[in-house]
Length: 269
Image 1 (spheres, rainbow, N blue to C red):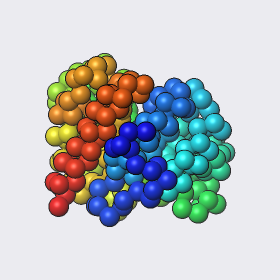
Image 2: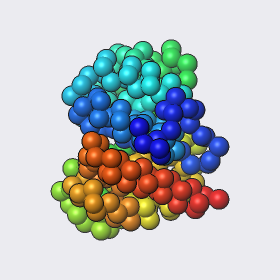
Image 3: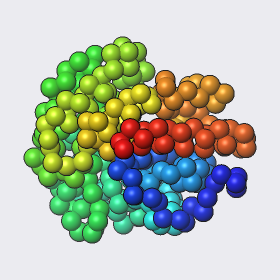
Image 4: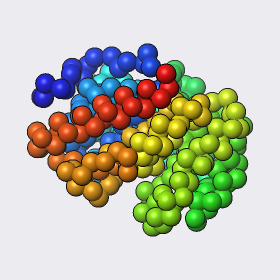
């Protein structure tokens, strides 16, 4: 363990107004746990078992390991549920997650059943993800607004405004046109009365704007990018690849996470 990596059993600091969630999208549990240690030491308060991690390793492997190592960190199971809602989210909660994602494109019945099931697990929450509602070019802002309002009306605990990896990878204009921040601003203006989370290759500049909109839930995605570790630039995108076996890379990632958290938090004070 590096000097910069603290005890992962320590309680996360929720004294700041901003909550940072680290997406663990590896396909190997051990690598995900190592990255989680770096993130927790850097100040990340919430850990997400990403969809690739759960699909490759299985929730029964991943979630209990995360819960055991980080008992004080809320854990998100990013299962992107579309059907069988009560059974799927119930299993995630039994295995150690305290939050689970459901797609906004799921039926009313599915979303309602997941929320009803969460009530059987004290403290557990449902996060409804709006990915896919911004149109093929990202300019259908009303689609994001409508999806968020519907989630609120169905009693979701969170709305997740999400620009998908495939969306932004297939259409660079979605990044150039800053659609994620435009969606976030439009949804925030609706005064939904529930927390809004923003995810999807956030740049540092975008993340700094979110607290000004009243959005305090920010997701840092780590390994979906294609830039080499030597070119980590948070003013471009938060996603990048990491060689966890290289102490220099680990230290660099730790430094970048701390910087990202510090600079975004400073905007909220």
